[in-house]
Amino acid sequence: MARRPSADFRERLVAALDAGLPLSEAARLFRVSIRTIYRWRARARRGESLAEQPRPGRPPKLPPPRYGELRALVAAQPDATLAEHAARLEAATGVRLSPSHLSRLLRRIDLPLKKSP
Image 1 (cartoon, one colour):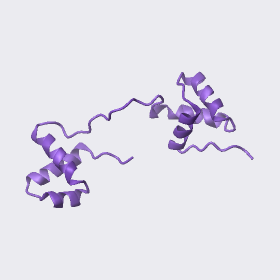
Image 2: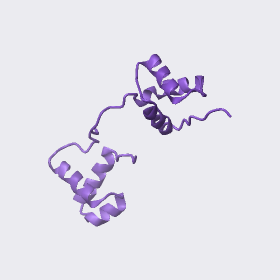
Image 3: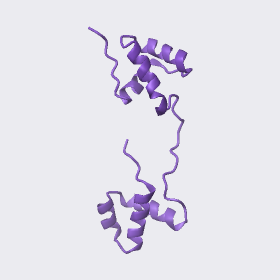
Image 4: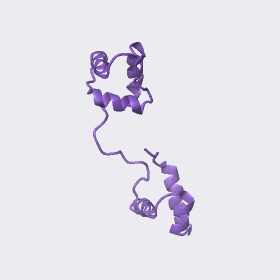
């Protein structure tokens, strides 16, 4: 997932437009779409903050600051199955994840689940 631009970046873009920079040139220089420029400019004109707005959706069951606990559990028993890891995670943290969810999460944090030969 791409990182969202900072409020400072957005404010600099809007300031450049207010100074007379054409839309197409601003889109090329700042590497954003013209539609994005229209949205940010409209927010600035309404007096709204250009800071990042909260993303919609459900918060993760296991937030990123707790990924270290998951890494420690997997490192303690690297040959365990996904179901065993899920059970140990629930016992240790109280967070219940399905084996498939745990598999996607391990892939996201670059922790492959490889068995010994």
